[in-house]
Amino acid sequence: MSIMGFATAVFLFCLGLFTVLTRRSAFKTVIGLMLMESGVLLLLVSWAYIPGGGPPILPLQGTGVDPLPHALTLTAIVIGACDIALAFAFIMKLERFEKSVDVDRFRRLRG
Amino acid sequence: MNVSLLAVLYLFIAVTALVAVLLEDLLSAFITLSFTGVLMATVFALLRAPDVALTQAIINSGLVTSLLLVAYSQTRKIPHPPEVCDECPSWLQVKVPAFVCSVLGLLLFRGLYSLAGERSLPEASVHYLARTLEETGALNVVGALLLDYRAFDTLGETTVIFASVSGVSILLSGGRRVHSGHGLSYIVKRGMALLTPFILLYAASILFLGHLTPGGGFQGGSVFATVAILMCVVYGTGFEASRISSKSKETLEAGGAILFVLVGLLGIAWGAGFLSNLPAPFSAGTPGSLLSAGSMPLLNIAVGLKVGAGLSSIFYAMIKILELEDE
Image (cartoon, rainbow over all chains, first blue to last red; front, side):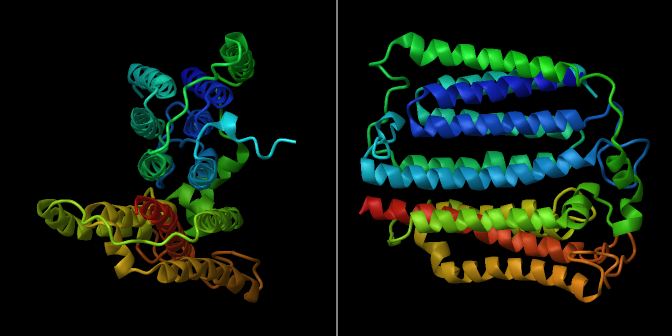
C-alpha cells in the first residue's frame, strides 16, 4: 500500500537529481530541485499514513494518521517555495550580467 | 481508501514529472509541473493530510508557478540553451548520470522497502493525538504542533522567509517600476472586482480558523498574496503598487515577526518559558469556538501577515525588474 508512495517518491527524487545533473538551462535545474523536493514531501506524507486512520482533526473516530510528519511537510513546502524564489532571483540576475541562462557558461567563478 | 485510484494518481505524477523534464519548451514544462503539484495535492488529501494538501495546492502549484512564469518572461528575449551539452560525448552527458541516479534509486528503494508494512504510531504522535485538546485547546492537531508544541521551529521558519525576501529584494534592487500595461479587458476587471471580497473572505476564514480546521497562517497568508498577484495581472502592474506601497508591506511583515516574538516573550514574563501557550496567561476558551486555543489565533495572524506580505513582496521585486527590461 504505502510501497507505491515510496516508489513514486524515490522516482521523483532520482528524476530531479538526473535533471540537475544533465540539463543545461538553469530553469531546468530549478525544475529538478522542485521535483526532488516533491519526492521528499511525498515520502513523508505516505510514511505518515496509517491504514484506517482519520485526518488529524479532533474529535477523532478511531485512530488518526501521524500528525508529526504533516507538520514537517508543511514547513518544508513553505521553505521550498522561498528557496525557489531566491533561485529565480539568482537566475534573473545572472541573465542580466551574462546574457544567458546556460549553466555551462557561468565560468566566472572557476579557478 | 481507494487503492486503485491512488495507484492511478501515482502513475500520473510520475508521467507528468517525466514529461516536465523531457519537454524542450520551458513554458509547457512549467505548466506540466504545476499539474504534477495539483495531483500531489490530491494524493495528500487521499492520504488524510488536509493541511498539507491545502498548502501544496496554494503554494507549490499556485504561487511557485506564478513566480516561474515571471522569471521565465523576464528571460524570454535571450536564446535558451539546448537541452544537453553538444561538445561532450553522450555517454558522459546522459548515460553516466542516468546510471548513477538509477543505482541511487534502487538503493533508496531497497532501504525504504524494509520500512513499509504494518506501522503503528510513534509514542510522541500518540501523545499529540490524545492530549492536544487538553494541552492547547485546539482541534487541528497539525496546527497545534506548528504553533504550540513546535512554535520555536515556526519562528525559525518565518526567519527563513524573511531571509529569502531580503535576498530577493537585494538581488533585484535598483529596478524602477514603470506604469506600463493597462491590464486585461473591462469585463475581466469587473469580474475581478466582484470576486475579490470572496477571495479575501476565503483567505480570512483559512487564517482565523486555523486552530479548528485545516489551514492556518501559512495557507491564509498565501491566499492574501495570491490576491495581490491577481490584482497585478488583471489591473496592470502599477495598480496594486499605487494602493499598497512596498514600505507598508515591509511594515506588515515586520509587524508579524514582532507580534510572534511578543507573544513568545509574554510566556517568559509569566515564568512559563518562551512561546508557551496555556501555561502562560492565555485562556483555552471553549473548544471549537473562534476565540479558543490560547495564543494560537494570535500566532496564526502573525504568520499570515509575514507570509502574505513576504510572498507578495517577492513577486513585486521580480515584476519590477521585468518592467525595467521592457523599457
